[in-house]
Every structure is written in C-alpha cells, then in structure tokens.
Image 1 (cartoon, rainbow, N blue to C red):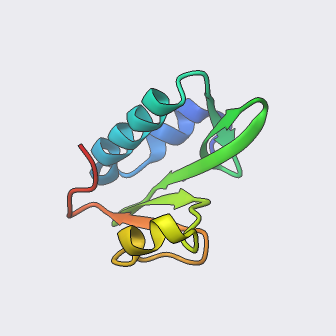
Image 2 (tube, one colour; image 1 turned 90 degrees about the vertical axis):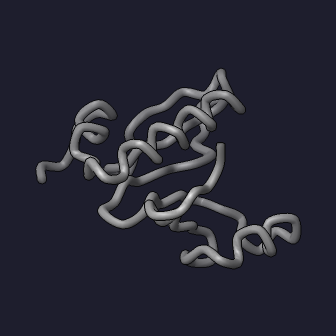
Length: 100
C-alpha cells in the first residue's frame, strides 16, 4: 500500500471490511460538528475545528481506530471499558454494533 497524499487516497486504501463503519463514524462526526474540516494528517483521516485537530480515525482489517479518546474522563469510563485501546485510543471492532 502506498502512503496516501490526500484524504481521498487514504479512504480508497481503507480495507473494504471497515468502510461501512468508517463511513458511519465520519457521518456522525460531521453531524455533530458540521463546520469541522476533514483532512489527512499523520497518514490517517482526521477532523479539525478552528484549525486544530480534535479527532483522528483509521480504518483497519479488524477495527476502526479512533484517536484521541479521553478514556480516563469519568463520563466515558464505563461506556468504553469493553473496548480495546490505549490510554487515549479506542478500537471499534467491525463485528459488533456501535452507534445508530
């Protein structure tokens, strides 16, 4: 796989299995922050608002990666405990529902 130079190239290279969930996640972010700009950064997709990135995503064979995610934020602790990920990352497995 070649390193993408823009968002469209990145989205074309995402594994087919993760495309439906990634489309839904992107649509959800756009609906919550419609004025956000979606672009490529660090070789993956991301959204920025007021010229600052606030979330990145990646499409993988088995999951969607979401970065950063404040896993230690009290309101998110319980909701996110069943998902894999690091201190500020979240893996959304492709084989289970996540959001409408």
